[in-house]
Image (tube, rainbow, N blue to C red; front, top):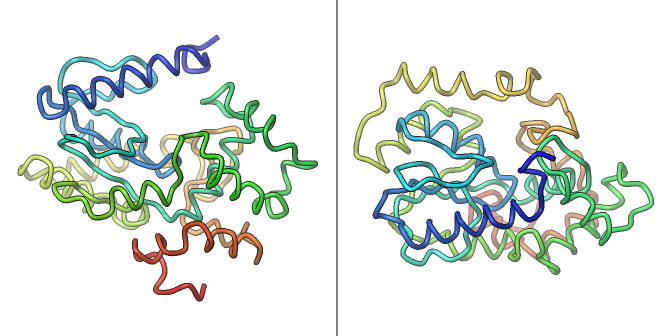
Length: 259
């Protein structure tokens, strides 16, 4: 069994990341890419690691040297060198649905645990199932133990943090990467180097598929913005407004609740 598919190894690895991030932030230093799950954090971490010339110890134990630490941290504490990555919560919940309820090339246990909680008649029928799934992620808070709206309200107003939107990365990753490096380090990333990094870690290069070509068994499932419009029913819309409508507005994804 691969280590990243072993439940106990994953828990131990997460503990080590948490301990080092909160214990050594600003000392090593670590560059922390913080996101609510399924917001594009692995993609951004790869690009920032390459831009800064530091390791990104993904799917293995962290190292005690300057590196990228990617995680899902709710409490700011004394963390430094932080990039907070945002994504439209409606796209997040759709991505979570497929990641949590279908076996993928990345995770070997989560889908089993979630299916034990959510016994849908047909897991492929996301439009029918999504309202109940939205209840599940916002009320039960198991993976992680906080909701997207909790994460937004903790981090949205934090100063000395580099704020990045997944949607802006999809539009112009090169400019965003240059901005991120400058805000983190005060240094200017060479434009050609930024362009090469973005190309190397593009969805097409990493998956061999074009954005929008879906593979439910791959951690990088579809790679597009606005897929929620294809999955949300009126019931899903009302559920999401109930739990996180204000946070959509606070982040600028909607002007008001008339969407």
